[in-house]
Length: 121
Image (cartoon, rainbow, N blue to C red; front, top):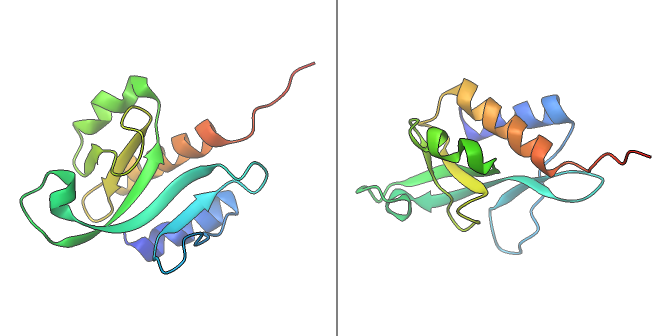
């Protein structure tokens, strides 16, 4: 999936537009409107920062994950140990490598893990 298609998917599926909280940066953040928690961050990085041999610049998405599915997801194409995020609770995906279904699953999981908690009386 391209970065543009991911942005469109998130806007349509979750009603969220990205913001750019860092000055002089092209990092795009997806966050909940109510609690402001991030559920995704799009960055450009050199592929070698992810442990690859190439130094090609790639679009990545950092997403929050459940530690129980972290290991199985790391076996999938395009999924890597988190770049610049907590290594237990976040994953990094290379947008051009991951399947659309896996990407949508991870975005949905991240959205649900970071959304406001429902209080029960």
